[in-house]
Structure formats: C-alpha cells, structure tokens
Length: 88
Image 1 (cartoon, rainbow, N blue to C red):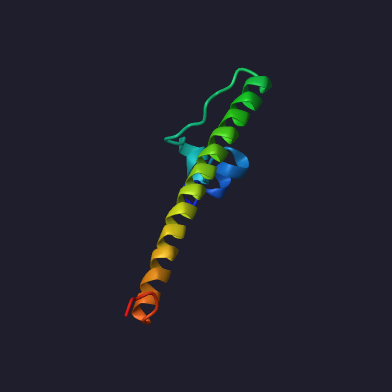
Image 2: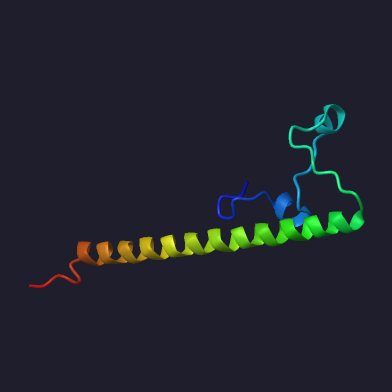
C-alpha cells in the first residue's frame, strides 16, 4: 500500500489486487465478486475506479495541506532560531 494514496498500485491500475499462486490453488479470503455478464463487470470496475480515485484525490489533498502547514511552521521556527522575526 502506498502511504500517500492508501492504495496499492494494482488496486488503482487493475481495479483489484493480484492473486498469488496460493490464492488460485486454495481460494482467496477476499474472493472477487462474481458478475452475471460483462456489462456488470465493466460497470463494477468503473464504479471501483471512480471511488478509488476520489479517495486518492482526498488523501493527497489532505497530505498537501498538512505538509504546507508543517513547512510553514518550520520556516517560522527557523527564522526565530536565526534571530529573524523577533522584535528588539
């Protein structure tokens, strides 16, 4: 799982996690949904993609906001440590 998005690359690109050989042999705990036809499969994959990318956009924006606040506070603290921004 990528720390900035909260998703694995496989989930974002393929719409699902890839299976390991052991999952194929014995079945996965997270068995994928079974679709009635190709239309249902395509619709489900589209819904998953939209949902994942919406969540990624939100997560990335939250990280940008928190990193902006952190860098701004760091700059203020650095200026104070160097004697700038203090009144004499």
